[in-house]
Each structure stands twice: as C-alpha cells, then as structure tokens.
Amino acid sequence: MSANEPSKPTPPIPAPPAKPMPRKVPAPAAAVPVAPVPASSTSSAEWGRVSEDGTVEVREGDTWRVVGQYPDGTPDEALAYFVRKFDDIAFKVHALEQRHQAGGAAAGDLAKQAGHLIDEATDAAAVGDLAGLRDRLNALTASLSEATEQEAQQAKELVDKAIAERTLLVERAEAIAARDLSKVQWKQVTAELGELFDAWQAQQQNGPRLSKGLSQQLWKRFRDARAVVDKQRRAFYSELDDTHKVARDAKSRLVERAEALAPRGTDGIPAYRNLLDEWKAAGRAGRKVDDALWARFKAAGDALYAARAEQAAAEEAESGPKIEAREALLEEAKAVADESNIKRARALLTRIQQQWDELGRVFPREKERALDDRLRVIESALKAREEVDWKKNNPETKARANDMSSQLVEAIEKLEAELAAAEKAGDKKAAKTAADALEARRTWLSALGG
Picture 1 (cartoon, rainbow, N blue to C red):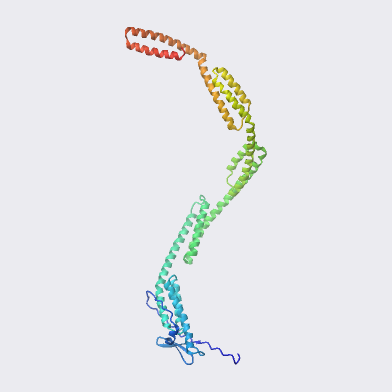
Picture 2: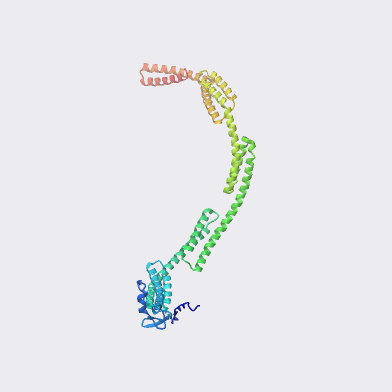
C-alpha cells in the first residue's frame, strides 16, 4: 500500500454473544397483531449508545449490553450499522407475522421459523427493541401452537383416511385374485387391476405419508394379489397361444388347399364349401392372424365364384333365344284351355311339352322356374278336366249310375201311385209325405242325368 493511498476503515467488531437467555413461553393468545417495522432513525438514540472508543451498546430493559465496536467511524455511523442489523431481524419477524395472518402456510413450519428468529434475536449484535421482537415472536409462537395442534389432528385424520382408502384398494385387488380366474374376461380383469394400481400410485404420490411398516404391509398384500392374477393371466395366454398356433397351422393348410382349387373354376365350388366348413371348425388363431388368413381364403373362394358368375353370364346370354321360344310356347298353350275336346287339348299340350324340353336348360335358374310354373298351371288345369271326364265316362261309374237311375224310376212310379191314392182318399198328411219323397227322388234322378 502506498503512502498516499487512504487507509480503509476497520470493519465493526461485534461483541461475543453472551450466554443465551431462556425462551419465554407466554400464555396462548387468540390473535397476534402485526406491528409495523420500526424506523431506525427514531430508534437508534433510544436503544443504543456509542462510547469514545467506538464500543456500541444496546439497551435491553434496564441494562446495557455491548454488541460490538466501530472504531473508525462516527457514533452515528456506528449506530446506523447495528440498527441495520436490527432492521434485518425486524423485517423477518414482520414477514413471518404477515404470512401467519395471510394463511396458507403450515403452522408447524411457521412455529419452527419463529423459534429460529427468537434464537437470532437473543443476544443479537444489533441495536433496537430486541426484547419487543422476542415478545412478538413469543406471542406468535403461542398463537401458532393451537393451529399446530389442529394441523396435527387434521394430518392424523388424513392419514387415517389414506389408510382406509389403500386398505380398500388392497381388498378389491384380493377380491379379484379370489375369483375363479379360469372363467373371467381377462381384458376386463386387467383393466380393473390397472385402475386399482393407478389409484394406488396416485394416493402414494399425492396423499399423506404413511408409516413405513404399515405402508409396506399394505403394499405386500396388494403386490401378492397382483402376482396371483398375473400368474393366472400368463398361464391363460400361454395356453391361448398354443391353441392359436394349432388353429393357425390348420387354417394355413386350408388356405393352401383353397388356393389350389383355382384351376378347377366353377367345379371347385363344392370342394371350397367343404373347406369352409372345416375353417369354421378350426377355431380362432388370433385376430391379426385370422384376418390375414381369412383374406387369402376368401380371395380363393372369390376367384371360384367369379368364374361361376362369368359362366352364369354366358349361359344367361345364350338363354335369351330359348326364353323367347318358351314365351311363344306359353302363348300357344293358352289354346289348351279353350279346346273343348279333351283329347285334342291333350295332344296340343303334349306337342308343346316336347318342344319345351327340346329347348334345353334356361339361365338364370330363377327365370327357368318362373317359366316352368306358368306351364305347370296349364298342365294342372287340363289334368283336372281329364279327371272329371274320366269319372263321368267310366263304364263302372256309368253302370252304377244306370242301376241307381232304374231304382229311382221305380221309386218315383210307386210314390206317384201313393200320392194319387192319398189325394183320392183325402189324406192330406199322407199326400204331403208322398209329394216330398217324390220331389227328392226326381232331383236325384236329374243329377244322374235321367
């Protein structure tokens, strides 16, 4: 350091702290008013003094306590330095009081901070109303004690609630594990257990902290239930994989056989239908595999049915003239009903039937059936006429009718004589009986053609 350079002031030397004073525990207070931060300019003369050698003292009650030295400054500078130290502590106290009044902060945390500030304000190297700060802090601590107890009670209630909720999750998981897992829907069971696990994690992350022993005990029960379900699920899907493999191999062979039918065209359709029955009996091979194999199997069938569709289209085009010819024969067959001579009507219909058969098959089949039905109506009508004619002209039927006619003639002659005798005798009752019987016999004879 050069001779012309001014020397730097020696920093103030705080006095060694005295033996800490015991904390005062005042009676609980209902509320703590927030005191304003004291202004250092009005407090320095009241609470501090500086001796000629720069020793700074603070007044606490009726006694003065040395807080440090400021040898290279003026008394005002010395006081101002230690007053700033006090203002720092007072600001912390004021901020703590405001946080308590504003709410939202945990009372236990605020009480801990108040305790630290009491320690900091006790024998502090500062000039100001340190006793007043301690009184405010003690009052704040007393006010926080009741809130701390309430928080502890609330925390206990939250913990009890969390224990009940986690126990319920454990019991639900154990109930799932106790089911007959050979008959469950695994997708649904997996979703249920997943929801329970998500709820467990959410409670563990967001809920209150449980004691380590109880938390591990509940988790062990939950984990064991999950392990039972997971073991059964793995066994189920392992067995399902084996079943799928058998079905996959069987369906793969069916696909190859179906694709091999392609050169046979329409003639391969019956064999393809048999393969389709085998496909239905082969079981499931897993959704993706089933879809892929079915796409190939269906494509093979589509090729066969497409060939049949082409053949049907060609046959339908070829059947156009045949359909027109059959329509013409149906028009000609209408004359069968108009022909009174049954033998000539049968001859006409027979000729039409022969020409009908000579035309051959007609496609599509629906059109052929419709045409056949129209011709069948004409055939049925003629057959009915023939049956009536046969019954009428049958020799045996005629003989029986002649015999009955002779009997009726004899009966009529006899009844006519009885009627005449009754009328001559004036017997009205006998005449009426004979007349009724006579009328009935004449009606029967008329029906027989007599």
